[in-house]
Every structure is written in structure tokens, then in C-alpha cells.
Image (cartoon, rainbow, N blue to C red; front, side, top):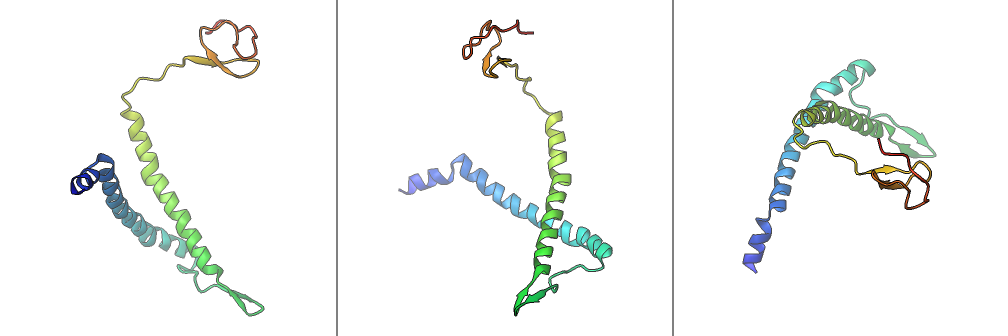
Length: 136
């Protein structure tokens, strides 16, 4: 049983997942710091307030704390924006530069009548039996 447990722990995907969690936590701290230390002060400069959590209204004795929701919404939007601009776009550009696999060649085409996928060499659609023009 111990041998099986050790094999489970040393399996590639378990180790990869553990590394991803640790790196993800560290990256989360960096993004949180970026938002709290750089972006939130910009929001405070524009709106005159850095923390909206004290904003409330009352209806029939029920207190609605919409300020907390605004804080969460602003945090989500700024974190998502920061991740997109500082992670997703640069990684996508980097990956497109270092793409090593050749472009995938299509082996099928859409039938103009029924829009089914048919082989490029086909002269007649197998689904609707319409004649197809030569593939070009």
C-alpha cells in the first residue's frame, strides 16, 4: 500500500499540479499587490475614495451594503484586466513566436448545400448527394 501511495505521489500530473498551485499562489500575491498598491490608488484618485465598504442604504430596517459589492466588483475587474494585459497577451505573443509545429492542413471542406464536412477529394457530398466543385 505504501508503494502504491508513493507511485501516486510521484506521478507526473500530481507533481505538476503541486507546482502549479505553489506558483499560482505566488502569482496571486503579485497580482493582488499590483492591484492594491498601484491600481487601487488610481481609482482613489479618480473617485476620491479608496474603500467603498461603508456605502449603505436602508429599506424597512434592512441594511444593504452595496459598497462591499462595489469593492469586490472593482477588485475583480482590475485583477482580470491586470492578468489579461500583463500575462495573457505577453504569453500569447511569446507562444506565437516560438510555435514549432507546422500549420495543420485541412483534410475536409464544408458542403455548400448542407454544410456537412466532406473530404477534399470528394466529388459528391455523402450526406445530401449534391455535386461538389473541385477543391481549390
